[in-house]
Image 1 (tube, rainbow, N blue to C red):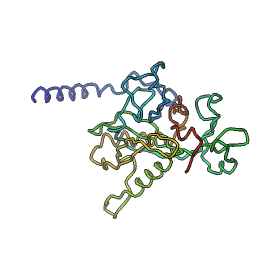
Image 2: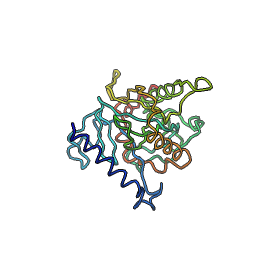
Image 3: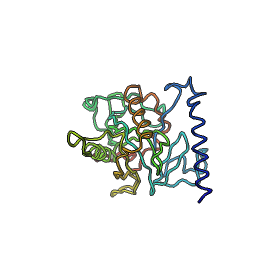
Image 4: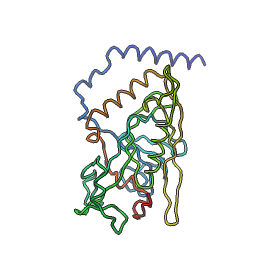
Length: 266
């Protein structure tokens, strides 16, 4: 027990010594020099699960949560603790797989784009140019550990079968209340934490893994964490945040079998 206490004390002392030099070496790194990863639920077609792929991870399983940039892997059953810092609804325009450059052709924020589409035989909302539109809930989050220390920022996209989960999450955020000196108020989302796990879902044709959302707590007592999450919120809100997103193999890795079948019920 004394050894553990000594290690913690040494770690604090080391951090305090380094604090004087905070940021050195990274002075010239700007938002244009970084990428924001997408957290993805792993499906059977994920390269991470393919033994012949360079991205193969023998510890990964279907339903796990994966960060393609950092390689961080979170077990779907255990889930992750996240701070939802900012939400943006977009209508992403994609080319079909094989013709796609790996990221949306365009990211529309006006829902009227859907009035320019017609439902294709594959169930997708197609524009006249042949591209399709996906109504996408974008949740910009900060992952924290069990002690509520910030680990990494990321984007969680919820579309098709998961769009109703996005709406549920937004409802949970908006309905949260705190008692203030002037009555009840809705706390900023960047001051709240949620546990996200995954579960197997199915219909008569397919099965896939989807998100499970559970409110954790308001982290009002964690001042240092709040500074990080608020700064992320401010930065994401005031910048071209989607220019930083590393879509990678978003269409390939973040599609469930149901989505690929064209059966989109929502």
